Amino acid sequence: MRSLMGLINLANENDYLEELTYFRTGASVPFAGRYRLIDFSLSNIVNSGCHEVAIFANTKYRSLLDHLENGDNFGLDGKKSRLFVLPPDWHDPSDISRGDLRHFHNNRDFFNRSTATDVIISGSQFITNTNFKDAFKYHVETNADVTLITEDIKEFKAMHNPLKRIISEDNRVTFINHDTNNPHVFTGTYIIKKDKLLEIVDYCIQNYKEQFFLNGIQERLLEMFVTYYNIDVTTMYINDLKSFYKNNLRILRPDLYKNLFMKDTRIKTKTSNQPPTKFVDGCEVKNSAIANGCLIEGTVENSILYRGVCVKKGAVIKNSIIMTGCDIHENAQIENVILDKDVVVSEGKKLIGSEEKPFVVAKRQTI
Image (cartoon, rainbow, N blue to C red; front, side):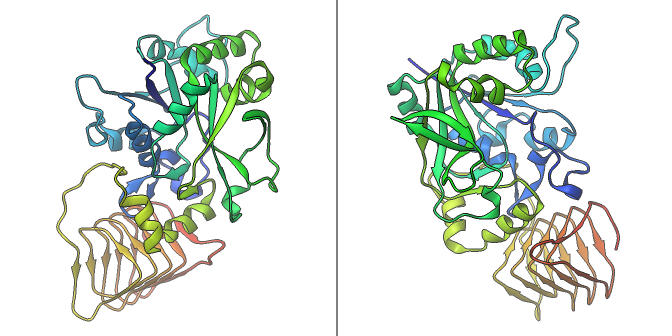
């Protein structure tokens, strides 16, 4: 009986969100009012039937550890379920591995001790709500070494430009490149036989390679059976500050919000018990997502407010993302802005960005 284990590989994800990743890894950046970016990949993997999930953490993972705790919020706290956060551990004097191969090599026991036959691997930059049970079924039926999760883009956006594209023949992937005119994109998630994964790790280390996917799979497509499975669901890709800003505000569309957060498969996150938001007489809120624990006395329009935000009388917030614990004082004006956690905007101050380049303030600043 074939079964899946999960891996979220953060080793190759750079600090791509500027001020938002000064103090945290990209995977733990807040998203959509109450989630973190990693919640989507982790929830999808758990919803696919995985009871063992590892996370290759690389740098600045304190916030990540705080958010994930022991995995109970994600259904990974049972007797047969485990969440492993695996930070860098380079103490083997005989280890010659480099790049993300070091994570695979130094955490080989994670794979060896599991009874699972296959591994689903993802990053944290692919945002969707789905499970990969059908993809795994296809992977087993075709007896593929690797099955890439792909989608056909119907409307190109800037967030799609950095993505890898696949070329196939008879359901076999023959080439992977970055041709931006090719609508068949690789989501960054794939399923691989565990034995093949360990074989690739050995090959890459023996040949002084550094990147598991690039050197072990992409450069050796013709040496193994690599197929693909297309999904047709709502997707987002967070690969820079612009895509982060625009995709946050996209969830204000009711149809998109419903497709992400109101399906039978749910996106899980760390729970937080706070009182309901208080809307004071005279405030005005239009087309916005307001988390619990907020106090709204001013105007909020086309914006996302996280937990515990205080908007004082006369303050105006438009087209902005205001994270947990921010305090917006009287008559402040904020437009096209991203405020990280616990930012204070003083009375009468104006912060104005643009849709193409939002103004960003790092956490715990006072303006």
